[in-house]
Image: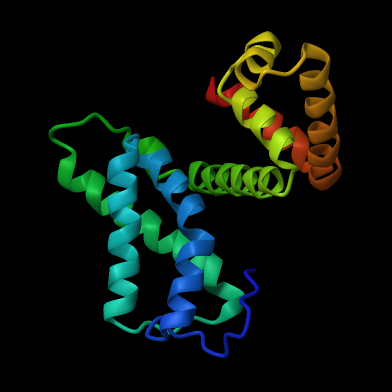
Length: 183
């Protein structure tokens, strides 16, 4: 559940609530939509359309169910979008209607979202090393790109992985499985 600072409303008509909800959930919702749509630009549009609907209709959602509500709205919008584009693109009905796919996708997006929250808390140099590593740069390539030694890169990676593993505990295994299943 998101904790919003100085927000007393749970109404999407409240500008502060809307803004904080959007900024807190946008990235994860876009990744979630992309799992269904396989098109990041279209996923971006779907998430924006959901938030526009919520704003225009001044929807009221309890804080305890906010996250689930947002995911369900995006899921429903993805399904409608896919149905509209079904003739021009190939989508598996079995996959899209699978509850386990929905839950797995949401879990995977949540894990990736948490990973990037942790990465954003790292020192600037460690963060740079990890972000380049996530882009499949080799240790040597990272060292060359950042003009640091290979051992320094290894030290930064070790420090970052230690913090990530500590935060994730059992979720780290899920993260590794997520990367393996994706590739």
